[in-house]
Image (cartoon, rainbow, N blue to C red; front, side, top):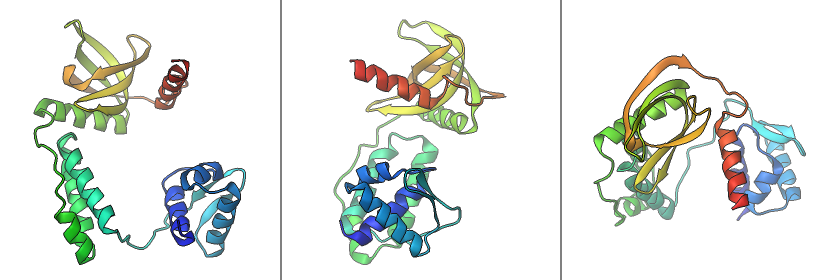
Length: 230
C-alpha cells in the first residue's frame, strides 16, 4: 500500500470509531505500531484534527470532512454487487435507501467506472423475505435504535406461543434466516429469536438503558468465551 493510501485509510478508520488504538490500526493496515505513530503524527502536522496520543488512542474532532471519494471500476462493481445481494434480504426501508445511496455514488463516478459498475453481470434473485418478516425487521431496527422495550408474542420450536418483554440488542442474518438477540426479562438472560416466528410485536413506551451484564457487548463477550471453550 502506498503511504498516501495508508494515510487516507488511517483517517477513515479513526473517523469511523469513537476511539482507535495504534494496535488496531497496525493490525488493519498490516504495518508496525511505530509506522502508525509516524503516520498519525504526519497527519496531525498537516492539520488533520486528530486528538489523542500514542499508548492511549486517537479520535477525530467533530466536523472534519474528506473530499469526495473516487472509486476504481472494481470498487464500484463491488458496491453494485453488495446492493443487489442485500436488497432482497433487507427490510423495505433499508433496501430502498441502499438503492438511493448507490444511485448517488454512481452519478459522480468517472464514465469508465460507472459503465463497468452498471454492466456488472452479478445478480441476486428477487425472491427474498416475505412482507411480514420485512415489517418485523423494520420494527426491530427502529426499536433497537430508539431503545424501546418490546412485548413479543413468539412461536417457539415446540409450536408454543409465549409472551415476553425484551430489550432488543441487534439483528443477525444467517443466510435464509434473520434472528435478533435481546435481553429477555422473563428468563433474565440473553435470548435469540427467529424473526419469522414472531407472531406479534408491540413497541412499548418504556425505554431501557445499558446495565452491566445486559448489553450487546456483554452478549458478544459471552459468545466469544463459548467459542473459545468449544
